[in-house]
Image 1 (tube, rainbow, N blue to C red):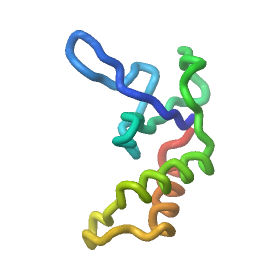
Image 2 (cartoon, rainbow, N blue to C red):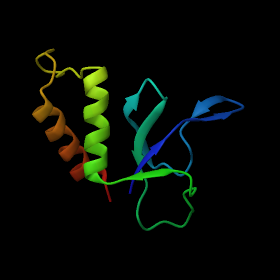
Image 3 (cartoon, rainbow, N blue to C red):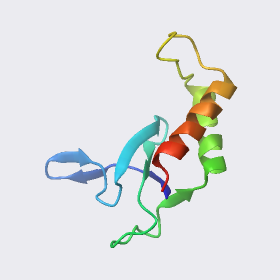
Image 4 (tube, one colour):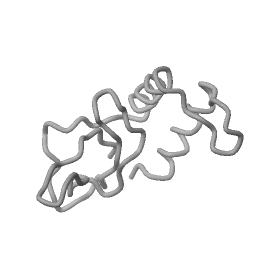
Length: 98
């Protein structure tokens, strides 16, 4: 399950919510949200207020961030194309979405 979330504040500072298994991806600097995953089958509850994203919704979100803050290819140090960003999201979904 793909989730959009914000960090939680705690006594030791900011931290990823405990219900996010793997997070910190595709941060949006304008609203302080980021993306992570939680397994579909789990023994704990994800809050109802958390936004759950489909692959298409995630792609739209990341392309919007890319429009405002162009993403750079780590190999070439050049701005990624829309297709490269879309392919990156698809690969991420294959690797992480359960």
